[in-house]
Image 1 (tube, helix red, strand yellow):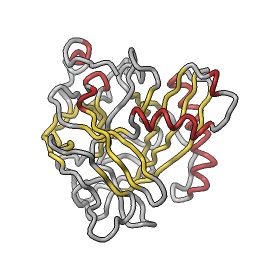
Image 2: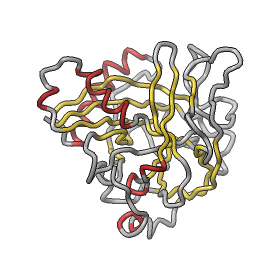
Image 3: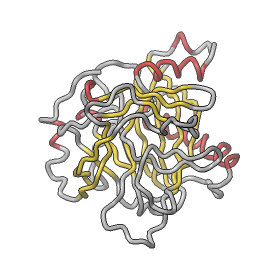
Length: 291
């Protein structure tokens, strides 16, 4: 991963970014080592998260009026992509409807030749609006909003995903490169509570990223958590509705010249009224192959 600079092109897009909010983002503490998070109720005496986090008051620019965002340059794009999903509580309908929509959108955004959805997750804001954390709850409950800055894949787990999805496919030898895309959308109208903040990939240095473990009942995954760096440039899209899709690149097998990782986090908007509807969102992960 090339080490970017926070000067020149990275700052230019923020030069006129007067609209925005100051909000609290949860970075990995500077001295944290080998962070582990549990995606299910941990064994007795083991904490849900082993690491400490440091909250930083951060300017998050309103990106709704920006033009020229590009997933290979910035790591994210907002697309007008209405969904035909009728019942967001029906997992089978999500798979039958949203998976096909995600494949089509992923190919449009990336220019890939093949796309495969391999996972999805529904998240819902905690009704008590408790402090944001890793967003996991007891087994069987809907995961809450994830308020830890993270990237879904690391250098290792991103490369491993190709063989996990394609297995022994004849396509593997012909893949010039591949990427992993996260498509994030609202399932409950306009998002007025805990939207998603994304960081411009060009403002993230490799040394900012820290490998973390996520432990599931039958496997252990790897993600990147992130330490604070004042060079980071954050953005969000207010008033995201069901017709919008935020597309984030979570891994790219190319090692230079493109955005490879796009850390992101839910955050609490300042001055949210108690009547604001709780956020319910869908994230779909998709492997895109360029053959």
